[in-house]
Image (cartoon, rainbow, N blue to C red; front, side, top):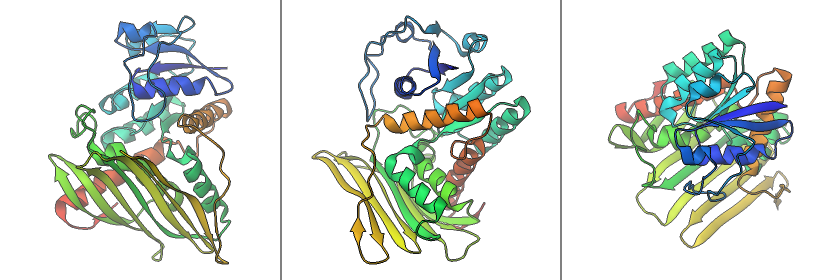
Length: 346
């Protein structure tokens, strides 16, 4: 049994707590929060943009700690799940690794590539796993695409386009502060940067155009260049100024013998979707069977993979700290390209 301590009880901490209830061989045994109401199980004030609303939780079998240091001193905890604000990720992860704990940390791995590299090296030194909770590859449509690409079921990857766009998240304090949350690239676009890195490897260079809001990039369009000169991948991400479409994401992925197409948006009028569609080499358009799921299921799969890796003492092919570090670096290079108006090498 993997005994888990969750550090930080906000929306993501709650989602992880609920997901662990469906992960075989894992149990949340401790939480750390400065808020005494949350330590007692009163999570009714927690809100998010998907999934269940906050509720009263039964934490009678869960130890509550006021600080991370107190939780790290608990010798029974095997895995520390960090759901703190992004600015605290690096230090919290390093403290946990030095305390001999495995770590899974919510994305982004950190706000700066240098601190991300410190986290990776600290995990190597401690002989513990550093896992970064990039959940996107565990969502059904992206999981299917990843499997098809890896197995070359329809030939090699030729290219793709990815998008991830939201309305201005006015409810997130310090969203545009690069030293607290990080802005749209680091908080939002990093999902697609990570997925692109996962399926195509590290780009050699990139060219981005976009617009700034204060110190961060608000909206970006990027062309990635890879060692394979015929691999063409682009991405669009950021914030629009209207509240009528709170969220949209999707992709077109081009393979030698098929194209995968998916689009989803949550609008003021309700959800608008193009289900995952496979355009085949013989001219058919079919919808691959995907498992029925709710918004928490992707997190269940993600945390199941993390716990499996800890039991086997082997790194994750999806959640590895090196991949997350590379995704963060890609986002920073995109911001550099927007600021300078020039291509940037990685």
